[in-house]
Length: 515
Image (cartoon, rainbow, N blue to C red; front, side, top):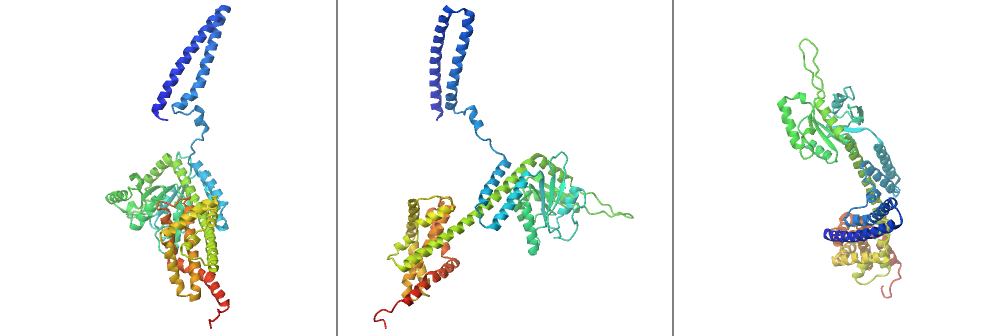
């Protein structure tokens, strides 16, 4: 309803209300004088007031909902009847519930169990009370020393050879006036050589994906490989800090220069105050004639920044992390279901490929246009749609199949496919068999192209995409003619079509006059 129309309706309602009020006042006045003839005034006046108040309340009750509707405002009870917007934890719980529905449809026992275990872990994460901080960095950056300094107690192996931390280790930390405990996770070093180094890096990245807050520890400028890791971590959607460790090895000017350089390199991803200097394990200072002096660790700036972030945004960090993990798990479960559906659909396409080929091998049909019609099958469409939970009528399936068939013919794919397969078969098939074989095998191959196009259509929620049906069909045609796909198809075609035709040809009696 437009604003002008609404104003006209309000004005009309006001006029009607004035007329009604005038008539009401006239009627009440007449009633008052009639009652005054028979009753004393001390009875008439209270009775009159009650009657008048009742009329006013009735008028308001009748007019108010209409007025609220006209002005575009909801009734007071309307907002209360709608469920309030959920928070991130509720959204995460809804994602987990959706995962349960997906798990019920996954047939592969191993993959289903892996998803179920991850779903149980996420359920426990929803109920946990700790903030998780994961430290990331090369084996020599000093992650474990930094954790030791933060905890103010010896943990892990400090100063060991690079790559000695082969498993993640977790430590609890209490921050003043923060209700939640903090868990520091020491991960294996990154950018290490060999298969073992790659496995440790994979483990570290897996832990990073589950963190509420990430700390990337470096001991100098970001090298190319470290910059790549930093950008990958920033792309996880987590809060990220960059810690410049071992500042005791540099002078103040060098430290300031490095901090400025790191803030410049990371400015597109994190705030300048999240690039923090630290000296987790300062080198001892020799003292003449006495024991070396061991300076205290300098991690106060880092600790203050962590505390400030967790105090201000800790609850949001947890909620964002939980929702992000739940969404990723939900996407993984949907991806698994999509692969299962595609596999089921490819079985259907494979079946109709060779059914059509067998029919044409026994009863060849004239004309290449009929091959285009044979390449699409309404029943195949119905069965593929059913895999995706869609009930499609026979007529709708036939219309969809014909549209793909016409597209294939219009793009020249029918003749192109026949020519392509004729060249491949003519080299290896006897002349007496080749004509029937070409027609049957071509029908099977075109059915495959059409079937894969239908699968793509249903995978996209019954949408061909921006390029339309032509782009999808052409893409599946090009994929099917690749060397690997074509060789696998021809191998199956020889066993299913060509060899049976050769056997049948040898079993036929010789034609009269052939010898």
